[in-house]
Image 1 (cartoon, helix red, strand yellow):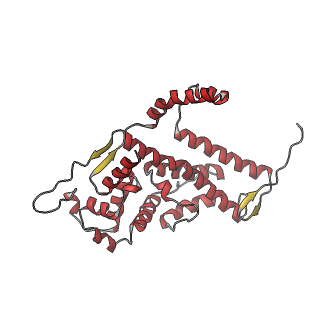
Image 2: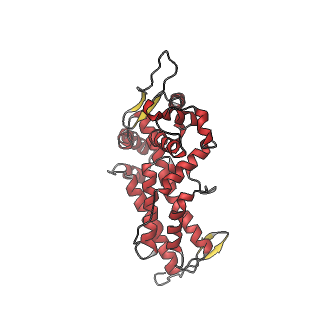
Image 3: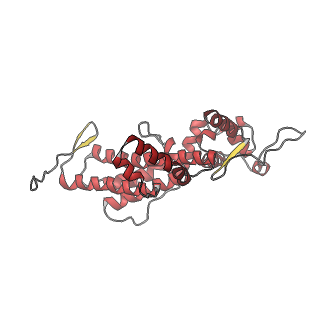
Length: 285
């Protein structure tokens, strides 16, 4: 399986195969050759001047369909129908291309003209907007970095809206920034699963529900043989896993925690980490 996965990745990079969700990886039917020389997969795409916008749009299309592993300057050039070297007049390399792709996605977001009052509904807007973008572009979460944040001008309105929601609610500068990064990291961390699932489904043609159903009997047998009664009881009962519900549940608990922090403690900051001094209720002790 590992060898087959590497082979399929190389074939996708060469433009010889493509992934179809729910079906698997299939041979690219539009690739043709003739005696006149090498073919192009999309002759109609040759019309019009080569621009950065056009290159970035092609990159997003490839990454959306097949993931970042399938993306390369050569592959983009093949999609557009131009020489690979011509792309370097507009972009430095693949890393630059990915940054421009991310920037384009963020630039398409604008906050509501009449945002709701209060920090919580505003942060919910931010989190759900980022989740929606990751849903539409499964590669986005893995491309984003928390430890090495990218300079994306298109993301500035997004960050401004989020930080404005936190500004003036009782947190100092480090606490506000840490809260914003925690929120983004929560969405990103959950959304990383989207690309992995899309790749697995494209390779096998089996979606997550079908895979879980196939694993059910093995999980139950494993639990019983290992004599873990609590785990056995949980896996023996029906549970419909839904990643959107998982996201909403986690988002709610994250914001609940911030609500408690603001209401019941005086935050102090050490090295950018929120450390609370809770008001302890001893009535039930």
